[in-house]
Length: 323
Ligand code: ADP
Ligand code: MG
Image (cartoon, rainbow, N blue to C red; front, side, top):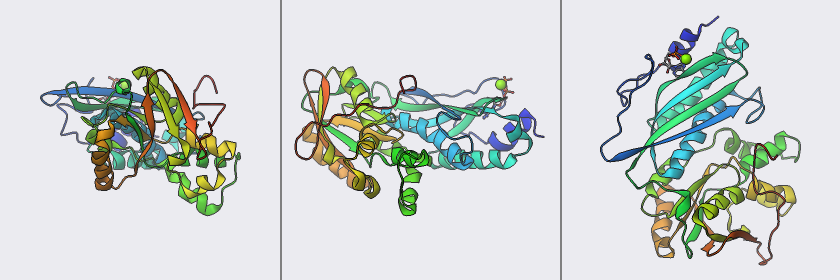
């Protein structure tokens, strides 16, 4: 049986040369680089709410950090340090060290890829619950915000939308995917790629940004509310995978695309005159960046289909208390 100390030592204590002080004292110490502000964000993954209790632990380690990295991306920040608070059922510490091993491997593989250092956390017994806090840096006054969209801006999104929601719909037996289709969509749900590089490159270019975690309509809606602006988007411009495209305009497929959640792509707005720069950035990062609409005056969000008809949906996105 592992003690709390064993768990921390064996699975989570790693060197953190970028911090003044890492794991082992009552608090970690960090010093921001000159001229930088700290960006701090927390995201919690709860068993039964965000993932199935028997979810593959390596994927959980990855995802618990990825969703936080995505928030750094949305702010244009460079992620630097993280803390990890874990509530673990006794059985996992007692019989199932493999769980901790795979979880920490998934976590650190992603952390290392972005040079993020784990500098602290908390470990307690309880129903499985994973809470990561991330700390990043962004040049003073330069963080990307939700509130900066201007009338006339283009609305852009990165990557594809809807695959994570489609994979989840399959797992919940709302839709049946073929084996090859599940294989194509599952990585979006289990091991999303946060757009960290893109976020930092959008500083000084995008007027507003958000990461799409609760569905495009909900998250673009936040940009519009914060910016006191309206938006109009063309659904057919949104890139999506072949399995999802094939099922459009079935209401469930529409919901996956526009309000699915768990996409972890970025939605941002920028001047029309910056189109060439954004197109060049897309080629450089080998990441689709697609113009899906425009910001206007007033308020509200309108979605058009290929025929120019208005698309209506009974939900805008995921809400823990309304769903
Ligand atoms: P305290 O009693 O002051 O809360 P702990 O014994 O909980 O301290 O933690 C000891 C050290 O291990 C601290 O530096 C804490 O930040 C770190 N730590 C605890 N749990 C984790 C974890 N899951 N991941 C990373 N660091 C952790
Ligand atoms: Mg503690």
